Length: 207
Image (cartoon, rainbow, N blue to C red; front, side, top):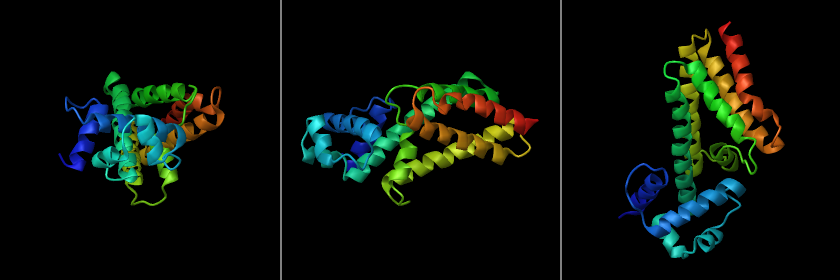
């Protein structure tokens, strides 16, 4: 099995995407890296700490992940699948009603921002850490954000907004603001009302 295939297998396992069973070491490494990268940031975590916490050797890590950069990208690919699973869950729960769909999604975002240890969006955090657009982690992050922007604009158009692109971008700005302010203010902060602010923005845009 090639290194890329091992990474893909690990990602599929972690995301619940199939019955593929990856090497145990790769599974443990990705699980530990995911936790550390999200809580403390990717740059702050070294390979030595990951392998120590995972209880594996450094060669085991590099057999599954060619570099720390690729490990970071693999973590974000898992994060991406989980993000869209949450987004799609809100969409499928309210078929044909994009206005309720986005408000349902944002209600859950607002609730998550109030939990202890909330660290915002892993994609947003990675984009801030890596300004180089060619960095593997940055590439995954940008793809996620571009797709989110497209979907929000499409949902705004389906709502009947006269200026759907502006409404979609406004919703994106609210989401990103919730991710950041949730880390800054924690419980009781402005992020808890992201759904209500989105509701007001949508109402003003459709009036």
